[in-house]
Length: 204
Image (cartoon, rainbow, N blue to C red; front, side, top):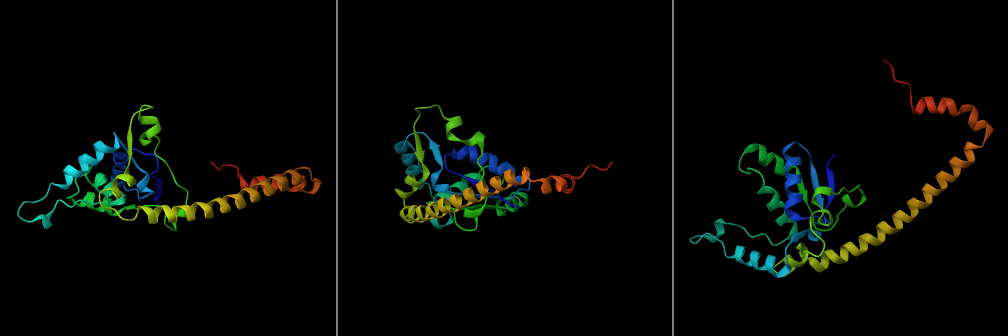
């Protein structure tokens, strides 16, 4: 099963290096909310760096590259690709195991999402240091879907909040039922049998 990573609040380079390593070891990885990734350094500095990168093209035939991706997901994908020898078969196979998305589309909105502690901005960047939001930067250099993603994310958050409220209710009812059952004499009689079925003794 693929590991689903929520990119919100991660630093781009540090996350890319960890993901590249996982992909090369055979793991399937899905990155969601790529527009919420951070880059260290002030906004204007990173934007100017990107604008200078936009000028780099093949002089005689710009259609041959380099290709300047404007969407956050493709920028993240390109950063990960740059951390491996992407022209050899092993690395091409690794990149096929990677999926990148802006926002959290289905079915990943209903899956458990992970973070990478070593790549989180709060653990790696000194408080007070400036950082850039990748989604904002992309929206100012040609990516046209930031508002759409914000709308879809707002809808998703409403749905997930109602789901969590329902789930919490179910958990509380289950705990209440377990408490009541613990004091029931009939349950006590069969509890040992139930425990042995749930946690069988190891056979050597």
